[in-house]
Length: 349
Image (cartoon, one colour):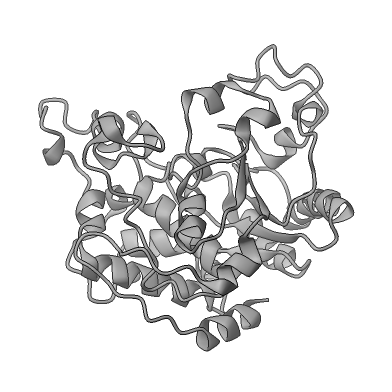
């Protein structure tokens, strides 16, 4: 599976111009239109997807358990497709704190709102459409299971989608929460399961290891001008959090997914849709306005510092650096093409 990605990335060359601060929107690409125009793309999982803006969380989305209220999502993945002239239907089937097992269940769910009292027959009662062209699975903590048990659970989910559409392409996410504080319950078994899942024909998308490697200094951003640490990629939602992705790591997630599907070089892809200075006029979702996100989700870091610009994250500065964004995009290519399974270096005996 990875060899195919390598071949695609090597064969495709794109003459996309870079820019200062934001990427220029490329011309519509016929390959992207052929692959994605009119297609249905499902993002399913937990808050590791919507906190980064891959899908655009809104108040309505957050409160509905109904599938009809979660279609036509305008988040980062959709914006990448739209920039190339492809009109896709992106479905946000994400629920905070939920494992995939809880989401694909016919048992009552009371994990947290909006589920309490609304899902007496589980989430599957509302999941009325199972025919998709691309499905991206994002898992929350799964302690106490063997690698084989985790793999078997994913196989069952994959079978459900393959039965509905034999041509569906499935992806399974490695996210930063595997390594972040507060989520030690993943452990070696979750990491070991990834190679087993890959053998089932499911593509592993390893954006989390990329982010964690850069955040902890194991990997340098080629040509980068910024200093990177955990706060460059991980949001401080509240005291004791420190594991949810911010909008920079969310863009990396969306870009890796886009490049994996299309085979396009990640370098030179647009991100002008990420940066909007005036959040009051932001047309997609207030959630995705960078200044609003920084002001709202890093506020506890500097209780005595009301100035949002002095709070302890530099993800907006990274978005504003052409050199750093190009370097991060090149790392997306590197981690997509990695045959060594980068996450395995974190497995301990």
